[in-house]
Image (tube, rainbow, N blue to C red; front, side, top):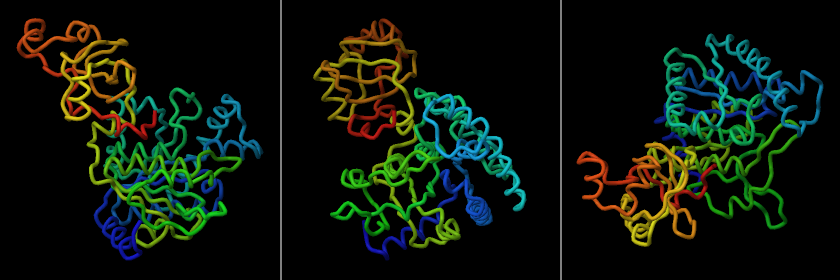
Amino acid sequence: MDTLNDSLQIRRELVKSCRKIVVKAGTRLLTDPRRFSELIAGIAALREKNYKVILISSGAVGTGMRALGMEKRPRQLSEVQALAAIGQGKLMALYDAECRKYNFHTAQLLLTADDLRQRSRYINVANSISALWRHDVLPIINENDSVSVDEIKFGDNDTLAGMLGAVLGSELTVILTTEQGLRKRNEDGSLGERISLVKKITPEMIASAGDTDNSAMSIGGMISKLRAANLVTESGNYLWIADGREHNILEKIAAGEDVGTLFCPRSNKLHSRQCWIKFFAKASGSLTVDEGAIKAVSRGGKSLLPSGVIGVFGSFKRGDTVEICTVGGEVIARGLCNYSSSECMQLKGKHHDDIVELLGSNADNELVHRDNMVLAPELKGSLK
């Protein structure tokens, strides 16, 4: 955290330099007609400034609840899925009608976590959004609640916003909520003054965030927003939490005003492939390694060679994600394996000459290259 002048300077430099903005709006903002209209007016203002905008929209379940006259969000998954199916079409019709007032079109994309866990689908999502931007269309994205189950859920749209910010290389992700931003916790447990700028997310912040954003229609809270901030800042970009109830809030953000809480990117950011490995990829197997390999990988920043592997577990193909583990089962890294599980069984414990004899002179020397690997300290905060 820093002084107000520093905060204002960072904000103003950010809004001048950034070109892509992910905006996430929560259910309680979208089920209020006046705030809904103000949101679209704000997005139209961003587009007028030539920002490429993507909207992460909650509200399908809430819209379905309103259509059926329900006041309390059901707990049963099938009921939630039914409400999402009812509400999503109605919500998009509202968006389309409101956006036509500003002479632009909308497009709907419904995603599950599997769409980002598989590298090819991850790239396709990014390409689809880029194509919509080329046609001057506003992409509106929501989790596909009508089909999602726990195994393929993002968990909440704050997480989805953070993930898409990382996928698209968006310089700024804005989460609009019904709070002023991240706030200090007073000694008596009450919420204190707003924190303007965060340069590092600390355990104390997470502990004090509490559950500040729950309602009958919505899920998530400040904890989920901090999780999204962690994801976005580790990918080298900014996340801004602001009060969506505040008049002209998006215009104020675009002007670099001191509203909400701005989270700054960390200095040693992960590159695009490392972000995917850490936050999205699902491990298909694991490699158990000896002490020498542990030192080389975790302390020396080296690639994993076959000579250090003593065990291969799971069934995986070339290019799949694997965990690198100690004999005791501790995960020291995760990365993309250059060989299949059956090939790894052949190669484990082998040295360069043995590999050439088995697979030829063009074979990769590394099972997992360091450029395609994320070490255990970096894995803290992984969203799987």
